[in-house]
Amino acid sequence: MAFFLSGSDTMIDFDAIPHDRLPVLLRTMPKAELHIHIEGSLEPELIFALAQRNGVALPYANVEALRAAYAFTDLQSFLDIYYAGASVLLEEQDFFDMGLAYFERAAADNVVHAELFFDPQTHTDRGVPIGTVINGLSRACETAQRELGVSGALILCFLRHLSEEAAFATLDAAMPYLQTPLQTAPQSARSRIVGVGLDSSERGNPPEKFARVFERCRELGLHLVAHAGEEGPPAYIWSALDVLQVERIDHGVACLGDPALVARLAAERVPLTVCPLSNVKLRVYPTMDRHNLAALLDAGLCATVNSDDPAYFGGYINQNFMEAFAALPQLTARHAHRLAANSFEAAFVDAATKARWNQMLDKVFAAD
Ligand code: HPA
Ligand code: ZN
Image (cartoon, rainbow, N blue to C red):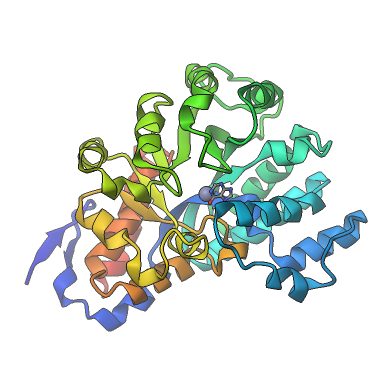
């Protein structure tokens, strides 16, 4: 017997949990989702419904034709379709509907907290006011909390294929909606923005391109994250840490090629928001059994499991857990518990809330 005293002082005998209990545990354990692009949760059915509601013409005849186009060869081939899909979003209600549809899926997967990335430039560049985007998503967060018991926050992402100047203009437009210690009376008291991130085409767009924007966001008291080491090299993870001074790395799977970087990430417990299905669909790994999730955990890293763009990559967070654990038999109940605990550790919430979630987590495993 190898009893393990967990964070909430509950005794859990992980070695006694049979492997065939894993699917139930993975599904029922409480978890936080920290890497979900809300525009990537737009299901083809909702894309067509919104296109009809808003009179937007789509270059696909029907849902099946759109789904058939989801055969990606790399990040850019996905992004081209992802930005086209987002073109149906025009009104505040559209953003609310998209957000709430995600929260309903998340609640079904026992997600207790989600931090949603959104890409304002994808919408403002089409003439949609930034307030329309932020108010719709913030209202979805409020409704999710009230009706589903899932807490939500928003992370505004800058598109790294666009300029620093465009990122600064986006930050300026978002200023009235930021909840930071220095901005205590936002124009919209309902805004849920807690931080900023960096996404879109990684190669050729290193983090340092946005050094000054992130410096300004840091001064504003915002949380900072960035995609790095998805398709890009370990050097981009180093500069996300050293130049942008981010608190979490999104993806980060490339780190294992650099032992000094792994040592740094482990020592500082920098969370990695890993997205297994995304990595296979975008061919970062040829198949799931080649994914490095188990190696990341065994290297002592604060890795988490997330869905990235669930409508495009074959499933929501539990599907990511299920497929990763099915393909990587070295992953055990201890790893499952660790992944959920890591997601709470990495979340931008207070310590008391994390302690409460950890108790819920331990109960699921102790009862087994
Ligand atoms: N990587 C970079 N940018 C993105 C992604 C991703 O996986 N999904 C949506 N925007
Ligand atoms: Zn992502």
